[in-house]
Structure formats: C-alpha cells, structure tokens
Image (cartoon, rainbow, N blue to C red; front, side, top):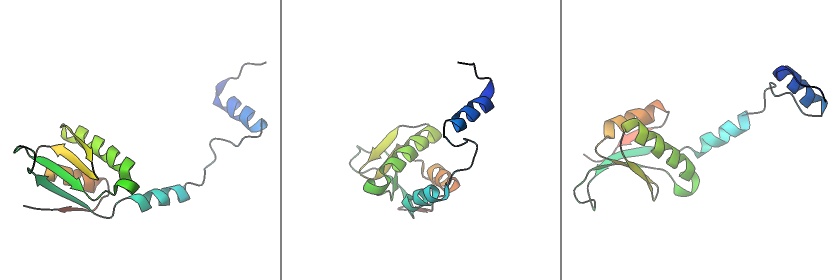
Length: 120
C-alpha cells in the first residue's frame, strides 16, 4: 500500500473507488428552501415581571415548539452569549434574564428575522 501525499491524491483515490469528487457543488437549493420554510414569520420581543418575584426578563415569542424547537434553542444560546446573561428556552419562548429588549431586537433583525416590540 502506498502513502498518499496531499488532498488531491486522496480525492483521486476516492473517485477511483466509485465516489464523487468532494469539490463538486452539491444540490443545496432544496435544503436551504426547506430551512427557510421553518423560520418563524414574526417574533415578538417583550419584557415581563409576572410570577418572577419582581425580576425582569426579556421574552422572545413566536417560535412553534414542534416546528422550531431546535432553531429556538440555538437562538436562545446565541442571544445569551450576545447579551452576556443567563436564560433559556421554555414552552416556545426564549427567556433572557434582565431587560434586553432593544439589544435582542437589533440582533434578531441583523440575523434576518422580522421583529415587533410587544408591551410598554
């Protein structure tokens, strides 16, 4: 067995064994449209203190738990890192500790989501 030098040799070996070249473009159009179909149409950003012992939380509502559960978990994680706060995902709502409505709305809009503020 000979030693392969470089990625081209490995790609040629893969092709010789019946595989396709890795650098050839794949059909990505169908997958990207499917993901766009799962993105929520509109997200609502609000502040809440009810049933939280007076502590403020920022809520991001509009994710359907059945359709967008994984997406909402990723958004929650990214927002927590962006705002530097704790929080989580519960019952279709992203929770962030503290009042971060404007920062959250700006970040969501920069990622391509349509956002509306809810409440006062």
